[in-house]
Length: 388
Image 1 (cartoon, helix red, strand yellow):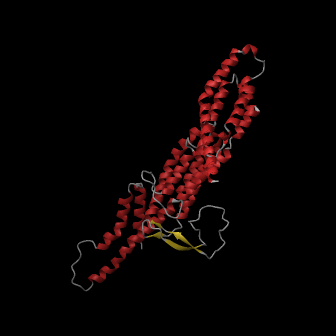
Image 2: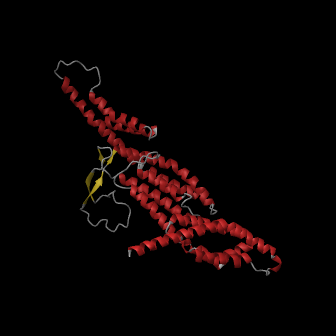
Image 3: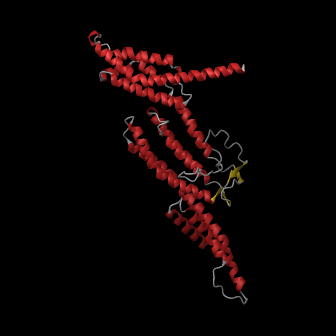
């Protein structure tokens, strides 16, 4: 039985390789084949039947029949990379065939021919898109987890979640995945990716701040508030146990800083994404770029709306870190009252300790954040600390 299965798999593999080879041969010979057909038809022009379109009514149906019979896996979307290559080559062939038609009327007859519609309908584009959708959504959701991992070395982002989000947006419009006929679905997916990331950032605001920079610290959270560890789904189990407590992952102040830095970076790169999308839209004759730009601006506004709340949490954490040391100032009168101690000539140790979080923020994140953002946080934290 095992031997039969192995032989079966080997046979399938050999058949697929043969079909790939046949398809590559068709690709390389297609232009030559069309040219020879045209030369033949022109040389025998005197014997042609008036009103009969030889290319449309004789050549094209035979090409379609040959592809369907000799290359049955041509239209199979199971391997999305191979499907993309085959579809792209096939559409190039169709365009080349249309260029060989003698007139626009001939092209219209070709596009109205049953064999033309049969050929186009063979391509299972919805299944191809669903496979690509699962690839992108699965990779993105794997990064939008409880534990905030750092982005890989060389990335322009700080967190893996942000790195994957930008990568997902780029992949939607990459030459390896993009197909003109899927533009509406790819555009919808683009907006969905941005919306998902915005929701993820909003969920981070519900996490308690930990004192450790990158530890997976879990604390109980009453289910009455939203659990940020739950990704978007059907929601069938939500609200079934209102008194149940679930573990929630805390977030460090450093990670909050990373989120703000990534939000700022992503907003900066959205215009770059628009420039990537424009040539793809022009391929299908789309010209209303103002609507596309407006939609991206709406997504950008949604991302920017998360920044004030994140900044407030960072300012609050900085202020609390500073104020915990400033409490030592209350002990100064007691230390010198009714004593012969000399008047201090240097700052007390608590002053250096109180200012240390500010110094760490400036020195540790100056390469990731704009100076204006750091300045805003420092001023806010100092103001809050001095008013306590």
